[in-house]
Amino acid sequence: MSRLVTLFTGQWADLPLEKLAPMAADFGYQGLELACWGDHFEVDKAIDDPNYVVEKRALLDRYDLECHAISNHLAGQGVCDRIDERHQAILPPRLWGDGKPQGVNARCVEEMKNTARAAQKFGVSVVNGFTGSSIWPLLYSFPPVPESMVEEGFGFFAEQWNPILDVFDECGVRFGLEVHPTEIAFDIYTAERALQAVGRREAFGFNFDPSHLMWQGVDPVEFIRAFPDRQYHVHIKDAIVTLGGRQGILASHLNFGDPRRGWDFRSPGRGGVNFEEIIRALNVIGYQGPLSVEWEDSGMDREHGAREAAEFVKRLDFAPSDVAFDAAMAEQGGA
Image (cartoon, rainbow, N blue to C red):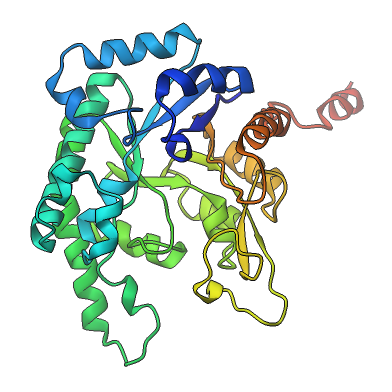
């Protein structure tokens, strides 16, 4: 079993897909996980233009690139977040509108429904993304946070996402939440609670990304073991913890790339994630989908890093054994 090695295009959306696709093929990738921003995969055009998905597939085919997932993190973030001026920077004008929070939330709900429809037209069965969270600002319980406020946040998540997931069910598409700080689920306990909030419906699962778990102190392998039937897609992404006595894990209001931070993202294989154990855990649960590199490293040239990451993942991946290693000895002894 050799899983497809793909590149998530979200961090490359400054480049048109026509330019990125041949670059990715040259780097050694076998496919792309298309982001729904830039011109990589435009949901409104996929819905309105009958030729759009055909032309997009033809572009990928020219470079022998497959696509098994699209990702709409930015619109997903707007579904449950408490909307403020930051969201204008990540949402297109048609979703931002006049910026009134309730309207932004509602437009993002419709965009995620249309993302499922666009995925169906494009022939992919997984949409990855974020959910947003109305209760992330309540993470530290001071002033004291009553449980009712947390329950209300998970209830709002279910209220917003169940109608979206109804459309996913209609389209035969599944949603993979990238468990992540600022989302309704950011560790194992909150992921379990999110599943319960939507009735454990099959349309809702996870886009496994070890980097966001590792720096929080959550074992990524334990996340796989906790939800073996919900790992709908996998990101290969690394991070490193660099606590030096002056900073904490909350990153001190210092942006990515600042060497004073307590943690940061790294190119795969150059951080603290134990990818060996992750591959073994994925083999145990029978995951056969893509291994998609989400490349982020503020200290490395991205073209160098993306090429190196493709080679790293190909060396990393291996199929599970279909026979016990000592089976030959057992047979010999019984002869």
